[in-house]
Length: 114
Image (tube, rainbow, N blue to C red; front, side):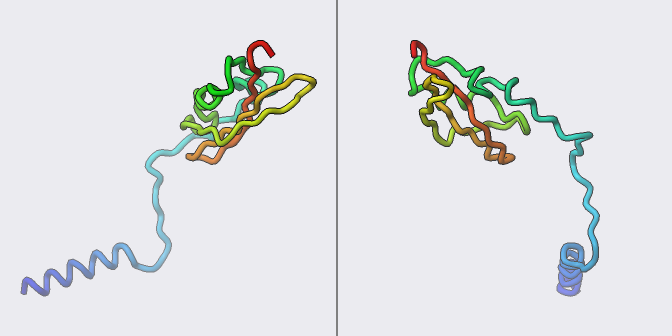
């Protein structure tokens, strides 16, 4: 008798998880709307005219990762940074990426004294 009850319990569990048909799942948390992405010129280092001043290229990664993702508020990672000549001024451009939502952007830096 105990074996028959165990088999019935397993059958019910299997049916609950693998039964055919549409499933309606309610999200745990629903958002009223997606946050709007601020324009690049409002983000720190968002364009060359608002470049962040640093003392050394060695601190660029740390500074680029300082601000959270503007989309999901998660942490961003600096993938790489490179030197570019923009409007006659040498700037460093860091590429940051949010592993949580996939958002990417460039953050502009200028070295103090250059």
